[in-house]
Image (cartoon, rainbow, N blue to C red; front, side, top):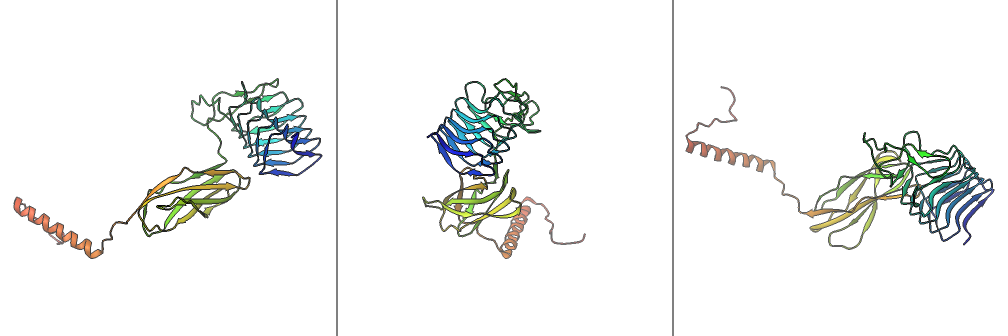
Amino acid sequence: NQEGCRLYHSNSATIASNTISYNQLGVNLNYSSNSNRIEGNTLALNNISISLLYSDYNNISTNRIKQNQVGILIRYSTVNEITYNEFTGNTEFAVDADVGSTNNRVHHNNFISNGNTKQSADDGSSNCWNASNAGNFWNDWTTPDSDNNGIVDNPYTLNGTAGACDYFPLTEKISVIQIYHIPVCTIYTNQTTIINASVKSVFSISEVKLYYRPVGSSTWYALTMNRISGNDTDGVYEGTLPAQGMSGTLDYYITASDNKGTIAQTPEYSAIVGSPAPEVSAFGIVLLLCILLQVNATIARKLGVKCTNPFRSGV
């Protein structure tokens, strides 16, 4: 196809959650297509995945842009924001800020194995390739970091006549959603089990789910985890695993989705399901103490050691 999606003199539109492939131009914004949003799409195997021509103030975020010739081409366009995208395996450049591109901002993106030399290019002017304290992740530029602050000590220099740099290249990939969870290792039969997770996100979380595979089953089941504290970008979520009637291994994992369509997933965890330890009553504890005292007294007599009653007060 010539174009997957085209905006012409269009303002304030949203292109979201699409898969756009095998086009000359995946998404084409031209001639005063301003203040539009392109988010949460997968753009693959196009000649140019997104083209901006005479189009300003657009926001391009949380897209997966892979295996195109050029990821994003910007020409005669200004003040566009390109953030939280992942560019992978684009053969020429991930982002090409061409002639007439000015004051565009490119930061908090993951650039992975794009191009033959540098992963992006800038032939425009006054384009910014980092935020005030963080730039992008470039997988060919992750060291050195002598002070361990997560920023590579030296700027990442781009191709092109502008002499542009990312002054704060990141040492690790950017995660739009982060899930923190301490795995549960043991589950008792015939008892429900609480699973907690802390979720942090750049954008608002829309759903957190707990997937589990019961003992002896090949089927995965899902249940929604509820937020018990925090807010929609930084909260603690709770879910309850149903009681298991037999011993064995239960597998589970957690996913979180944001309102841009990004999904994060934990590794798969395994918990051992078994019978709980027998409960000991208060009477049983007292009886055990008495037996231990009697045993100690017997041993003391055999050794000729005088034994003091620990329960007698006074001198």
